[in-house]
Image (cartoon, rainbow, N blue to C red; front, side, top):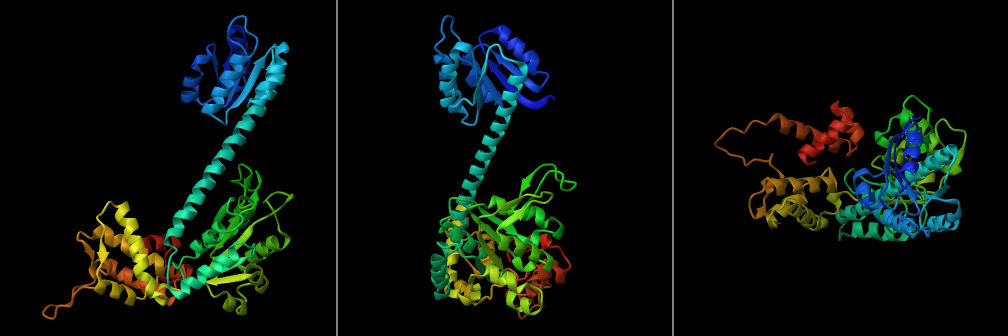
Amino acid sequence: MNTKTNILIVDDDLDVLQTAKMFLKQEFSEVQIEQNPEQLEKILLEQNPDVILLDMNYSKGDNDGEEGLFWLSRILEMDPSASVIMITAYGEIDLAVQAIKKGAIEFVLKPWKNEKLLATILSAIELRKSKLEVERLRNTQQKLNEGIHKNLGGFIGNSPAMQRVFDLIDKVAVTDANVLILGENGTGKELVARALHKKSLRNQHPFVNVDLGAISESLFESELFGHVKGAFTDAKEDRPGSFEMASQGTLFLDEIGNLSMSLQVKLLTALQNREIRRVGSNNKKEIDIRLICATNMPLYNMVGEKKFRQDLLYRINTVEITLPPLRERIEDIPLLAEHFINIYTTKYKKDKTKIDKQTMSKLQQYHWPGNVRELQHAIERAIILNEGKSLQARDFFPQQRETQTSEKPQPITLDEMEEKLIRKSMQTNQGNMSKVAKELGITRATLYRKLEKYGI
């Protein structure tokens, strides 16, 4: 079998060590033996063994197991996910039970039967994997929660339109009602979803974000419902889908308007039955999620055009939250600008800077087709390029040159032409990324790179 695993055996009896190593080397890729438990800390730091077999006694004449219990505690202090198996003589079973209460996972009796020893170690390996996976998920969730708090920083505004949004979030968050968030690209739909999750009773559980516009039809079921090993060519192991990963938490389905009619049926069935089935499996799994959806597309018009199912729309929009575009809340621009200036002067280690009144007036007159996201990118770019103590209009609108009556107009560059074309398409298609990419003849990924490049 020669499983790729690192086994460490600690025992003062060299014969026991050699016998165990000879047998276990046939099963595992690395077996390390050690007579002196004083070397444990060094080994743990350097080797990080998957399973540790630890003797109860090391000093001649001692049989109280105190040394073994001491080193067990020390191991678990250094690595709480360690899988430790105690090695004990027949008369020390009570001590072995005490060790299990202190964190050991099992014990083996001397002399052991090889089959029993192997089975115990294999179980310990699986437990170790489970512990590490739980730790990974815990760390991932911690980062997600940190991301929630971090991302909410840009979700600010004093305008009446935004105050209505904040009030609605406060009312809806504590319920389990399905929420549909509507608004143009860049208005902060994901921030609303994260705010709802943060203020909900599910905030200690995962927030899972799925961009439906980026999932192909062939991968839809696998991504949302999961799959079992062998379900298709690349399914090398069992994998949970987004519904399972969001269990007891919040599932955020972004760009739901991009789903084809056939995929809408599959989603609707899962939501109605409150259960999913992994691809390749006959077993159904119940789902417990809070559903939040978002789109920049006119779903009600799409229902009339038979492009979106009416029953699915009813299912996902128990409550609707519509985000205003930035051009409809220009009084928030100074507040947002100050917020982003603080972020990027700190990030790029620049002196604090301000925007003069004339430039701020121009920012408020601009139509901002990319909304808050475009403003954010514009300020980041301005902070990077500016070398003065205040941000000027030229820092935000470099393509707008002063007209010189005595000279011919400056020729427009290819980049400027491309930026102008993208902005025009964004405006024509009301910020719908899929339509913009199709109109320009480029992929969505390429479009996003260009939006980043031009600060749109």
